[in-house]
Every structure is written in C-alpha cells, then in structure tokens.
Image 1 (cartoon, rainbow, N blue to C red):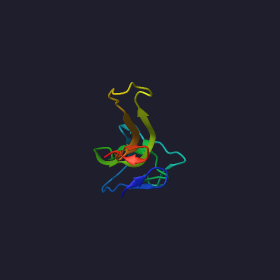
Image 2: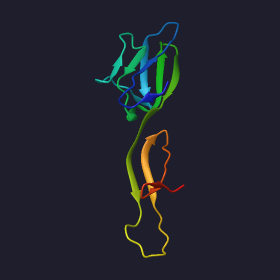
Image 3: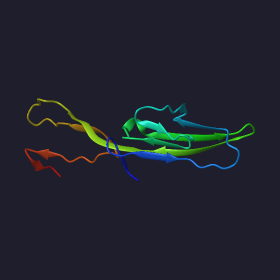
Length: 124
C-alpha cells in the first residue's frame, strides 16, 4: 500500500507464538516511543502511526523475547511526499551567445520528474 505524508495511516502488526515475555519495537535501531501519532496496542503487538510523516520512513523491528531466546522481524516503510522545495539554480544575467546552465531540484519520494518550459512553451 502506498503511504502518503499527512494523509495515510500505517498499521503494523507482529505475530509470534510460544512463551513471550516482552515485545520491543525499534525504528532504525533506536527504540520506538509512543506519541500523539504513534500508538501501541495494549498487548504491544501492533503499532498505529497516523498520520504518517516523511520522518516515519525507515526500518522497523519488532523483537519478541522470553528468558531463553528472542526473535526479530523487520519491515521497511517508505512514505511518499512532495515534490516540495522546488528550486532553479543558475546565472540570472549572461552575455549574448554564452551557454547557460540551469538546474532544477526538488525534495520528493518517489523521485520527481522534471520538465522545462521557456516562455510557457515546452523545451523538449
């Protein structure tokens, strides 16, 4: 499912069997903490993130443990956003006949596509 920043919710559920004494959630190898957007179920086996933000992209780990062993499952989340912070870099003034280089950039997931126009017409 495509997750869109500010619009989507992510519900992550883990499953495990046997004698489980603890369940620990991590994101990118750091403990995942509850917040106004990140809510754990009462048995700690699922996490709800609503709404998702781009900072929620990453590798999630859930570790089930008992006194003798532990097992970890991983899930990668990618949050789609943008494009935003669109900018053009280049010279504002050049001499006639001199080559001009312009570059356009934007923050986006997935990567944005770019098109160029000159005085409202596509440049191809």
